[in-house]
Length: 247
Image (cartoon, rainbow, N blue to C red; front, side, top):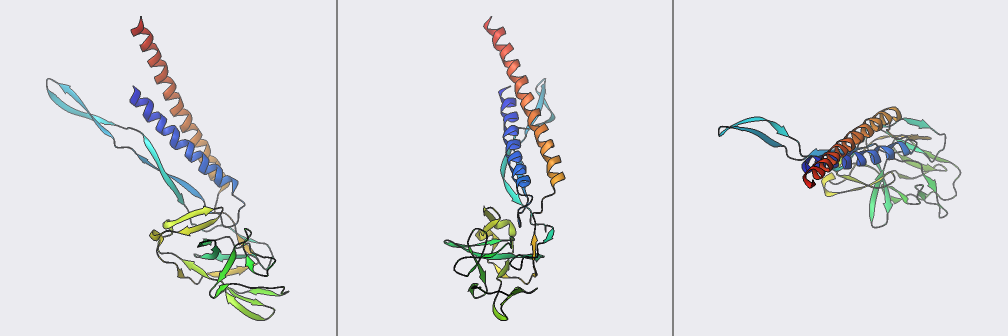
């Protein structure tokens, strides 16, 4: 009986994590470059049930022993391209990531909502410098900024650099650093330059479907409630058993 409580409790824990992930997806539906997350759940080993009759054993089925949420998977399907008209907003049509200079390491993002800091450098909304193929990109106090489809940055008619756009052999090896930035683990492989189509004056929005996420959230909540009712049933049965034995 206690085994049943543990099994149901593991289901509640997994559904609780799913709820957090779905809520985070819905909270970032308007975040440029955000990638939808899904929870990876694995089942504990099942146990074989046998029936004993006159020292003869016959298999009658298997018994599940619970589940475990082992991680979160990032979906890198493309998001909707939204036109902003801002010359510092750029979107990637296709694969690839912008390279960002963050403290101690490089980061990668699909969020192209850039701006210019007080020093004249092209930076993200978090203040991290955007990297070109020759290093951080200096804009200065220029009035005319053009970023063509190949990522070449032209400032007042002068070519400054080309946006450093990279791709990985295994995007599953990318780890979310915070917000919509990622760091690369050895599993992702070495980043290599990738020729993606750059769209100036546009942003790629989150690849989150609000309706689908709401439906998934309802299903998760129902599964959580089902496991909760199982635990309550076991608890009531245990209570009755203790009372009967005690008397």
